[in-house]
Image (cartoon, helix red, strand yellow):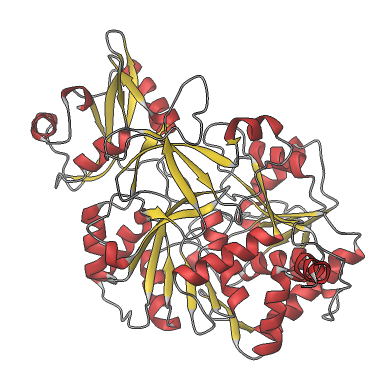
Length: 555
């Protein structure tokens, strides 16, 4: 065996962009991308030429290997063009959250020092402030002006204010559509940098190698399974790991499938697009699937082409699972993972709805364990909790093909999160003798009441069984006697129920011990979620402290 030749080919030829280019050659006239709102479509050949124009313009401006292009864009053709252009120039594709405050955008600018920064004109006012705040100024600033999308936009436009930078489409005019000169690359080179949501502090940059991208795409191709006959629609933002790599641009364009870009989730429009464009795989968090299910019950569409729905980002509760399988498709999948590791456990349709509520078992190439949770140190990887579905511990993950074991410019975070080849997630869970893992909450979200550890997810799942509860987030609030008391923020289904009714419900529920029952309640119209559908418990905790001071919590 010629090991040197094999190693050379593997390290220099096994690249994600080469997978895309194979599809340009194999399927030049096949539709690669369709913009949902306008119906405009690009073949693989046309999309490649657009990416070349962007890459050539960037190269003319001095963009080189390992330089960073950062973009705050909604799911759109321009998002994909930026991603492809970075790969063609052996640069680092860095999509960021368009919902961030100016200070957060400024921070990641200073952290990654992008050569090129691209943003949607809808957030021009935020970017203008960020550019003023940031000590680092990108050499090239571009904006994307989406035409004919007024009826689809729910946010504020630039409103006549000055829009920093140059329009991306004009910038691309100077770049020819021929293939840019390729730099020698390695499958171990960083190609993507994703930033965590920053719910517990400043965003952390998560570097991903070319190999991480390829093996994430392979993972999706195996688990859906996904191939060139498919059409994918991701309802979550592509700047998220699950958005980019689960039915988003990375796996879809790697296997030769068609991507439908939907700028923002709207249940009516989404159901229309699913029928119109023949979507075969739909991806989204359980929170958005609830809206889609209600829309389908109100105004049914033909989802005959749908092979499956993949949901991730938060636990899939049993009642929701049964409804989705009945109303949308019986082919429901549920994954669990992190920004650092992609998805690492999975539930298949034949395991649902029986195993809903759990995160499933580890994926084919992943090792996922539940170890003892200590306050002052990490557990050793072999310090496992009992596989009895009761003892709570911390989830640790080894996923060598999909994680880089590092953070950008953040060795302190690396030391905190990684140990002996595992990511220590901070997620608390139980597991059973068949290795099914059930998430109980996060270390940071844990409520300690009179010395007892309380996990919000357990209480939230119980209350979702109440017909008057539409949604709920549980947190802790300071209590002089108990240390912390449980508080429940509830979106009611219709008229708010009486607090006494909820107290009776909790006292009679089989899963709610006395110390787990909420002492305070508040009814609200909305609850804080991240852009990817995760409950923001820390924000509710902040709200509860303020509301208690104001005396507006109910009991």
